[in-house]
Structures are given as structure tokens and as C-alpha cells.
Length: 311
Image (cartoon, helix red, strand yellow):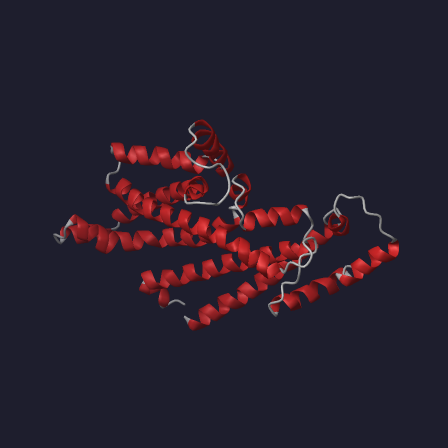
């Protein structure tokens, strides 16, 4: 198991290196000039010498590969640098301030999705072809099919503009969490419910479940003691993958609800060519996804002892 973890971590380092390289290359190839954005919209005149001095200060006059390895060295040492556009603002502080609202939003949405979806999927499988099963599948199918941005916009129109119950944007107060959490959790909840129902149905048809029933065990003991444990294995895979991409996928929701998180900071930095901030966010999200996948594999081994023997 230890060798497996070390091997996965080394693979993760390679992936992070590749991601940072492509992120840097794409930003370098992007049209626009960050110096013009630094000057603002005041049509400030600048001489060639002044422009060259600014380029030299930020290292933009060096070859791109020198800029990349300088940035990578600083990143590994924990120095994320300063924002090019927001002068004097350390990137680490900006990301930390934005990460807290994003984590709060996503953790709440994820917990709600898990708490509702797993029991709902289990019960739908146990009551297969019942009215409850049909209702759950209709709702889950709609939740998977509806785009997140559409759900977010419709929830603002209905609950904020029509009824006036909830604030349409911002993050002040507990009511501000309801609509963005709903928009984020709906798709995850629907997907996990469908997955749980499908895996539970498959497990209930296995021979060991039939054997447990033939021994006279109660239905509760068969479901909880035998079926659920094995049905959760595919769900853990989805949970691990979606946990990483849920945070990176909240960019749209944060933009619609004007949520002061990583998504809003990322979009604003892309539009303003704030390379330091964009690169740092891309790398940190990549690391988060990789760690989520590694933790998923470890949970696999905890739930199924057979997997430990193969690691």
C-alpha cells in the first residue's frame, strides 16, 4: 500500500508539471497586453523606455521558458508572487481569501447531495418499479439533464425576482447560500442517485445476497450488512472524481450569483490577463483533483479488503 501511494504521488507530480506547462503556454499565447490593463482605461501615454522597464521588472522581457521555470521554482518554494494587475496584492492572499467562500459553498452542496442521494438511490432500488422509484428516476433524470447555469438563472428568476424570498447574489447571510448550493447540489444529487440505484440493483442480484437471504437473515441485515458495502464502491469513484471537479466547476455558479470565490477570481484574472493568479489557481485545482483521486483509491481499500492485497 505504501509503495502504491508513493507511485501515485509521483504520477501526480508529473501531471502537475504537464498542466503547469500547458497553462503557462496558453496564457503566453493569449492575445492582449497586461501592461495596457495595468494602466487602466485612462489612455495613459507611455514611452518605449517606460514600457521596457515594466517588462523587465516583471520578467516579461525574458524568453518564455525562462519565465516558466522561474515561476515554477518560486511556486515550489511557496512563493506565488504578486498580482500583475492588482499591484501590491500577493497572489497567495488573494487565493486564500477566495478559497474560503468557495470551499464553504461546495462542501455544503456536496454534503447535501450525499446525504440525500445515497438513501434515495438505495430505497429506489429496493422498491424497484414502484411509484417512489418512478418519481425518483424522473427527478434524477431531470437533474442530470438540466444545465447548471439554467438552474441557477431560473432559481434567481423564480425565488428572487418573482417571490422575493431569497437574495439573487452576494454571500452575506445564510439565505445567500441557498440558491447557489441548490444549483450546485442538484446535478450531483441526481447523478449520485442514479448511480446508487443502478449499483444497488446489480448487487441485489448477486449470489452472496441470495445466499444471505436463504440463511434466514432479515432484509435489513442483508441490505446493510452485505449489499450496501459493495454497492458503495462505484459510488466512491464518482464521489472522488466529482469532489475535485465540483470546485473547479463552480466557476459558472459563482459568476451568476456574484459569489466572491475562486471561480469569480479566476474569470476576473483571465479577463485582465493576470497571469500569476490564473496559473496559481490552475495548479492548485489540479493538485486538489489529484489528491481527491488518491483518497478515493485509499477509501476503496478501506471498504474492500481484497483491494488492499493487490496494491
